[in-house]
Image (cartoon, rainbow, N blue to C red):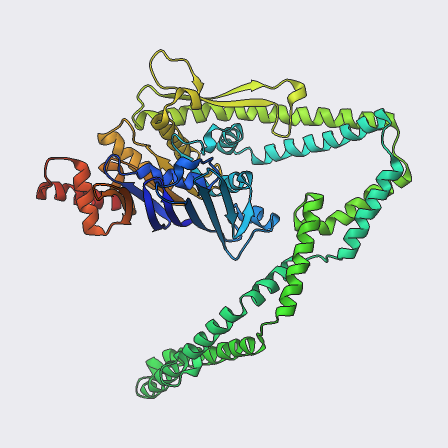
Length: 557
């Protein structure tokens, strides 16, 4: 989840810092205030290209920092660990752009490339709108949407596995046919790799233990301080600790139970709570007493983990896979030493693997065809509700040439739309305008919510060219999506803004010579005033305010 964005000296923004929460956040403001600049800044942080024009006039450089909360289940966490960029449960991205147009990027204080930012950004945010950073344009995202809708995960996995097995045999067969394989050189390399892994001596389960110990030692001061505070509140504070209060209440209740036996169960529960508090305090005290900062041990752990990560990168595997890699390499050595199977048998195995792949790929293709029909029907219905009355959608499948078949199957998949009478179907990225593309994206998110694991969605100009009841439907759809992920929406319509659970106003300030953009979160009363402004009119009346308040109340229901 995006938790914070800080922007300095970017475009017309001198300095803005915003905190975000789960749910639907809306950004509003008058035309020209710079609402979309915030989305552009987020895109830069996630790998969009930048030039010197991004730097605020009169300053040396622009700086954009974004902070994401990334627990172990976050889709970006595995990538961060593989790159050696993980840090606690957060991901801090910082992008600097100079007046010369040069750019530098950092993830958790480590310098990274622009491609690294793009890769990481795909795990963190989807931006829907007329911006380059939107995954809906990619063939991979389009295939994932269709396969998720059809619940093809197991079938897709089987196709990928069959393809991998076939390609391994094909490569072995090609090497045998060329006769160019240097057996001794291959054995020497394999044995050297095995020796490296033996020297590493990584035991099963050791990696997680090392990471846990590293995190504990790196946070020893924080742990000690927190434990001391907790222990005081639980037990050691003689005047107001939980134990003292519970014990006093227990004694009082015990005496009252002598007067009325009905109170005895409650007195017994307090007595048990007193024992549990005392035992918890003892456990915490023992943990705190043996907790100590050992810089030498921490340095050793960092070195050990870095060595593991370096070797994993060398072999292009996850660090956790190194334990099994040694056995795989040894098996390969045994195969070579024992003599390879005959060319005829290898050819037969490759042909059988090829047939198995195409059989499963054909099953997947049939399943995709069926899923495409239902997806087209459901998304087309959503488009009509979202203010595109002539909108129709389809997932067009065409067969790949056999030589282009891959781990994703034998289908070329393209999401297409037609939005006007008499218009032929075409790729969504070419047929739809920025606002229309946003609504197509929104329709897909509603129907195929969860097709990707990206936890933060940004919609820019999703309400372009609509109003009235359609705008309210758009707002409701956004709020539905935000029930299980974070959604940010830039809007100029009160019907959409009223659905927001968090509201930010973007305004442009000027002193006659210079202009700057300001953004701040709105309270309940301020929000009513902002919606009243958006509803229009020369002046804001009590009737307008009542209408705005009613819209907010209706959205909350």
